Amino acid sequence: MALFDDRLAQEITTLVKQRYIDLGMALGATNERENLTGKESPLQQDLAYLIGIANGGYDRSTEAISRAELALTRLLELLLGNVLHSRATIPEGFWRTDIGILVSRVRWWISVDDLITISNAAALAFGENTQATRMRIVRAIENGMLEWVPDPSIANSQRNKRVLRAQVERLRELRTLPE
Image 1 (cartoon, one colour):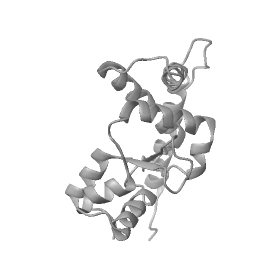
Image 2 (tube, rainbow, N blue to C red; image 1 turned 45 degrees about the vertical axis):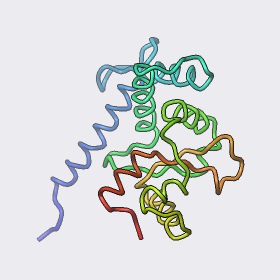
Image 3 (cartoon, rainbow, N blue to C red; image 1 turned 180 degrees about the vertical axis):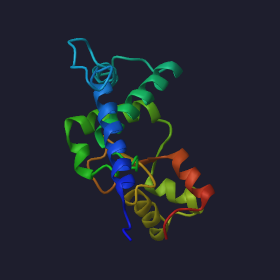
Image 4 (tube, rainbow, N blue to C red; image 1 turned 30 degrees about the vertical axis):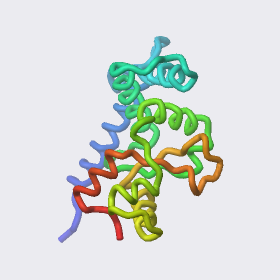
């Protein structure tokens, strides 16, 4: 008896096809057979907005922050998403590319009051800031449990990582930080 059958192949094909459709829609196709038109695609609209933010062209407001968060989420999903919808860890080298710098600046613009240091995250999650608790936060970053953004004001790549306070609080409540 075979462990796998055509249902698995169909499931994988469906997942890949949906990813293909999602990418096409982001590029402006309204259905999977349509060729790309000359009009600005949703991806181009999102990029124009994110670039405007990174260049200092927008003031912070609740509406602007929500729009930026949505545009940034869609961009990262297109860049890092996969057919299994599993969370991808952003490689450290990404932050040295132009798109990484753009993402970093926009994330800082959106979350400037909510980004905390590894030391602060350790104290928040575990009640103390020790080498062991900082390492647990670093492992959570490496395992993809916490997203991080580089602090552009700190040149040392070992000390410039910032995490979102809300993510640390959520993991603390769930008690799912790695040992």
